[in-house]
Length: 398
Image (cartoon, rainbow, N blue to C red; front, side, top):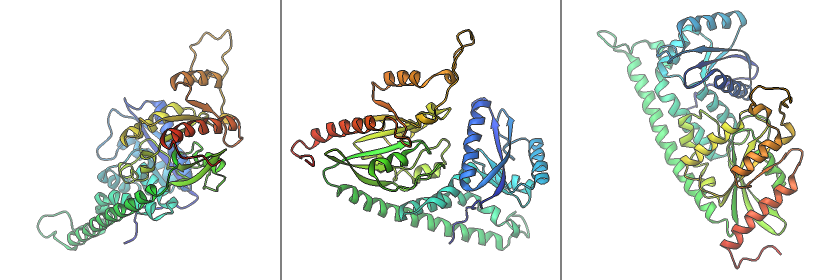
């Protein structure tokens, strides 16, 4: 049975829809929509306009108010828009009601969009199985939309028809497929655990961090290998492990899938096994994009996922990458307005994080190789310390 989550073809025009609530203010909403716009671009769509609405709670029928839906429908009609993308996950009934308003236009939510990108990027059997499993779990409660053409599911006298049996058959096929994929994942996980055991006496280091912060670029520069890296979200899906040698010390470095806020629950579950590599690491290199306006919140979301997979207690080196792209607004001496985070220079951030992390952090540019030798020396010292403690009789390379 083929995967049915829709793929966004290149060059489609999209509008984004977000909400402003008590928990998600205007600034936060703009930030989420920026990320959604980047996700849409990664999937190959162009964002034409954004719509937001202030709501105390989401509308159970159409997610946003009916007036706003009509306004968006009018814009979509006038500007020949192909896709409407919502920033939060829509319930099956919300999706059905919204699709009725927009007719033949495609309605996606954040989950569907992320699944679509993952499906396009998955390479190994492990990642493909995980994505397919997440897609079926997402699809199962939404099957009814695919059968509305039979319109025999309403129940009542004289309404019992083939729709009932066909949708049930479909549900059963998908449930069987889900359990088959779950068994397949258990087998793959066992194989990967065996592979990890066979890696001998080498320290394991994992690169972790938010998506698109430069993990793969650091991996390529350290291991002199060609791991796929580009300025898009989720360029890396499969965990890549490379043997790296700094001076006389060999160790294993793994590049992991990037984290993102509002990651669909189906994906968190199915990608937990990808993060086994992180769980079994001896120490972590947490890469942060210092040039991103809200990098602190990205750090928080990564730390939350580390807590979930019980890996937050591992020794960690914070690497603030992309210092070549960092910019700030210098505060004038006669300016009496309160100082904001946008006024912090790189030196200010260094001071803050050095004290927060007990000097366990470094500021670099992997692309421009700024502070690169310091970074390599720091990694060497940390790995050497663990290596000599764990394998006291294991001589280095020379």
